[in-house]
Image 1 (cartoon, rainbow, N blue to C red):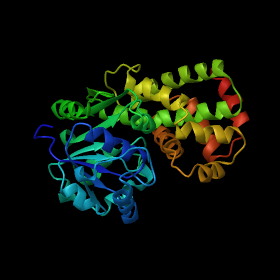
Image 2: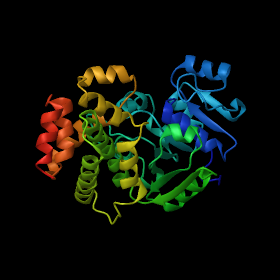
Image 3: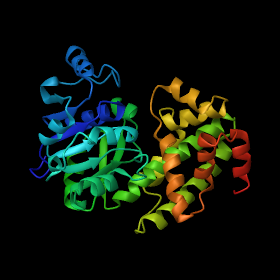
Image 4: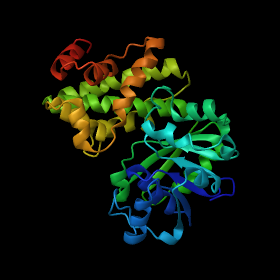
Length: 332
């Protein structure tokens, strides 16, 4: 890795954080890794793998320095990749002083939006900690952690207003099974990641209700049009919506067996209540929080978003799934 990227830190010990650690260590000799629970760190030392997530991925612990203090982890690093679930970002970053972020390249790997702020991570870092745009990036794309663990060919995009930093990080994570591209559409890619989770819940609801592949294709076609309308209005920038970090990420999240959001929607379509489905999953489906944030955000823009609105109504207004899909069909 080039000097400007320096020491890399992963924030988060979940599935995606573990996959990112594997990705970075394919090329780099060492990482810093923040994991909040000391017992999880102890489990790593005993088992040489994450005791809770992607347990089939083994690590050489000589290549890792673990931290249970987020501030110490950031302070000891140059490039910080954030893989904390969006609902928990505020409580963790509350412990970090503004000065700690000075000269760090903060890279969001979140697939969600910060609840109550209705901001994606780049906006949160900029507004709350005054981090300049050139020191903020995002990693996104159609890349499930489970397939990274299996070393199946995957693609990611690194975005930043500083394309030199984005390029250097993309080169640092490229390996025999991971290809990386660059972009300058930071906020657009982050919002697309939020939207694709919402659309995956919609796809799951339809699956749970036993709608077939024919209708799923129509649904996803409408979702990509809806995504394009939203991004064009909220983040006016020249982009190709069929690129992998927009359409590709939406498709894999909407169809994959590994998609938590599709799973949540499928359970709701089968008759589970929202709360029961969340409890049984025991994992966070970011689209649940994203649906509320996007609905609130869109109250300002008034963009035509029938699919996102339908998911919000099912999740938060208890609209029966069958009624919700019947209403949605009238738009198509």
